[in-house]
Image 1 (cartoon, chains in turn purple, red, cyan, brown):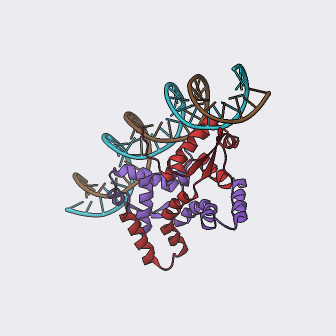
Image 2 (cartoon, chains in turn cyan, green, brown, red):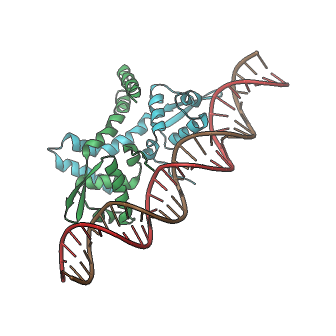
Image 3 (cartoon, helix red, strand yellow):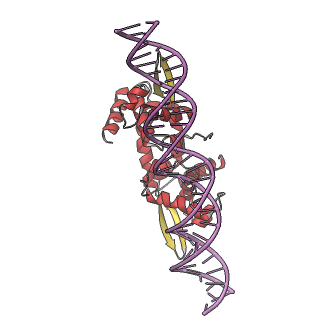
Length: 110
Length: 110
DNA sequence: TATAAATGCAATTATCTGGTTGCGCAACTA
DNA sequence: TAGTTGCGCAACCAGATAATTGCATTTATA
């Protein structure tokens, strides 16, 4: 029942990725978000809950409305995981030692 | 049955992410990979199949062994999706117009 | 040649996931 | 105050997922 929420699992769903893009531009309510998709407001609400559980979004209350906005800092975690791979495709021909060191370090920290 | 494979779904699984890290350092066989996890070789094989379906890994045959290696180029797709968000956390205080333009462009291209 | 090893595939199963509908509650509004 | 709106939560359901076991095939080895 207590499913461990994970940022990678959060962005696995295309609707959630679209939500992140939308609220990156402007904080939005569940109702406003739902208008952009072919699903119910409740379904969007569940997606927002998942995003909130892994701290990718935060709420801002305004009367009976709830504006969801992006927690941009959390997105860095994806970037961090990607970093050693980025080195691989950027410096494929040199600095290989550095790349391997970073990868091994990341693996040991697991 | 024909589940649409997606790179974001592929990296949603922690075992698959670990596999990517391992083979980034060195091409490995399913048996060798399986030794690093608490699952059967067949389970690892299924993960490799998922990764192969979205072209994150490629095979290199060697007798009865199959070495899996990373398709580093495919990882760029994650990076590409992340790019506008990276702009947000790097240039939070300026160039906001550029960020929004990128996001909207990305959204229109869906 | 007989045996062992490396691998993929099929069938099965328990669990997770994303969606729906129905409901209750708090907050606006006429 | 009565009705409407915005929202989250619970129950339910079909399909997807990850893991297991069993098996067939190909290649290496004794």
